[in-house]
Image (tube, rainbow, N blue to C red):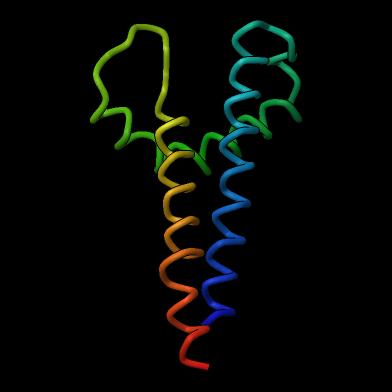
Amino acid sequence: MIALINTIQFALSIYWWILIASAIFSWLYAFNVVNPRNQFVGMIGNMLYRLTEPVLRPIRNMLPNLGGIDISPIVVLLIIFFIQQFLETSVKPMFYSSL
């Protein structure tokens, strides 16, 4: 069971970095640092959008409209952090004590 918890934590860590990459990419795209007409840049943007949008969309719908500021990635990162800490401090010790 500990292996399953470690795998979940690893998957959450990977998604953490995908969210950060998506936020950075959106800034680079918005400030015209990357060429939006480049096919490779478009593929990366599309991939990041498809990986993050299903999670970010419901959060955006629940948050109030803050104009041009999107804090949904921060909310999702906090949720991921909470889940990781919960698994580490509450769930894992239950299985270590039973060994």
